[in-house]
Length: 378
Ligand SMILES: CC(C)(COP(=O)(O)OP(=O)(O)OC[C@H]1O[C@@H](n2cnc3c(N)ncnc32)[C@H](O)[C@@H]1OP(=O)(O)O)[C@@H](O)C(=O)NCCC(=O)NCCS
Image (cartoon, rainbow, N blue to C red):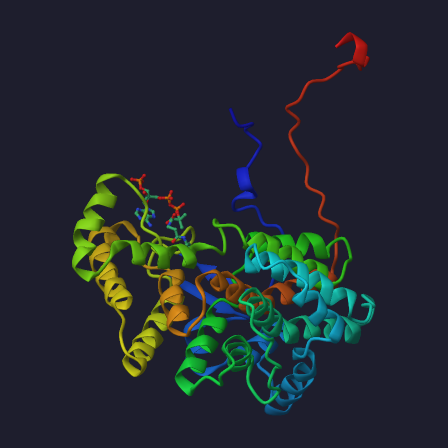
C-alpha cells in the first residue's frame, strides 16, 4: 500500500514558482506570459514567442530583428559537430540522436559563465539556433542523405523543413509548422520541463539541461503520443471503418489515442488552431484518406465521449499535419523537442535567477540493520 504521505509522480505538488505559462484545464485556457495561446497562434510566430517566453514581454521590432540576427549564425553546425552527427549509428530513434548531439553541442561551444546574464543568453541562443539543424541533420544522416546547409534567411520553421527535405517550403507549409511550434513551445511543469529544471539546479549549462529534457520527452507517456495517433489512423484502414472501429475500442474499454488530456477537460485550446490550419493545408495540397479518417474519428468520438470531457488533444492533429509536411513519423517527437526548447530554456533561465538545488525526500521501504555476509557463507 502507498504511504499516506507519498504523492505518486508528485502529482499537483508545486515544484517551482514560475511566471512563464498558465493553464486552466476546466476552462481550456493556456497562456504564455499572460497572453492566451489562441492570440499567439493567430498573430505571432515562433521566434517572437521565444522572445516573449524568455523576456516576459513582447519584443519591439528592433529587439525582434536583433534576436533573429543573433540566432542565424548558430543554425550552422561546426565541423566537429557535423563529424559527430555523421558518425552516429543509423539505427535507433532520432530522439536518442538528438539527446546525444545536444550534449555534443555543449562540448563544441564556449563555456557558460552562469554569473553573467550575457553568457547565459548567448548559450540559450546557441541551443535554440542549432536545434532545428541538428534534428534535420541527424535525420538526413539516418536516411543516408547528405546534410543540407541551413539558410540564414529562413525562419526557424522554414529552415527546419529546408534542412530536412532539401526544398524551400511554401508559405502554407511554413505557416502550419510555425503554428505547431508556437502551440507546443511551453506547457507549465511537465516531466521534461521538470527534468530540465532539476538538471539546471545543479548549476550546469543549458546544453546538458536541454539534453536531459530531450531524454525525458522521448517516452511514450510524454512526447510520443502524436506518433501513436498516426499509427492508429493507419490501422483503422479508411473512413468507412471508423464507426465499427470505435465501437470495438469502446467495448474493449481501450483508449483512443489523441483524445483526452490529464489537464484539459474541454477541447485542448491548441487543437482548435491546429485543426483550422490542417484544414487549409489539406485544402491547398490535397486531402488524403488518413485526413478523412481523422475527421470522421473526431466526429464520432466527440459525439460518444464529449459529454465525459474527452475531446481531441493537440496531438490528434499534429501527427496528420507533420506527415503532410513530408516529415517521417519518428521525427514527430523531435519536432516537439524543437518547439519546447523555447520553454525549457525559459525555465532554465528562471531557475538560474533564483536557484535552489532540487533534493526531494523519499519514504524508505527497505530493510534496516542488515549485516554483511562474507561470500563463502552465502
Ligand atoms: C491523456 C490521458 C492519459 C489523460 O487521462 P486522465 O485524465 O488521467 O484520465 P484517465 O486515463 O484516468 O481516464 C478517465 C476515464 O476516461 C476514459 N478515457 C480517457 N481518455 C480516453 C480516450 N482517449 N479514449 C477513450 N476513453 C478515454 C478512461 O477510459 C476512463 O474511463 P473510466 O472512468 O470508465 O475508467 C488519457 O486521456 C489518454 O490516455 N489519452 C490517450 C493518449 C493521448 O492522446 N495522449 C496525449 C495526451 S496530450
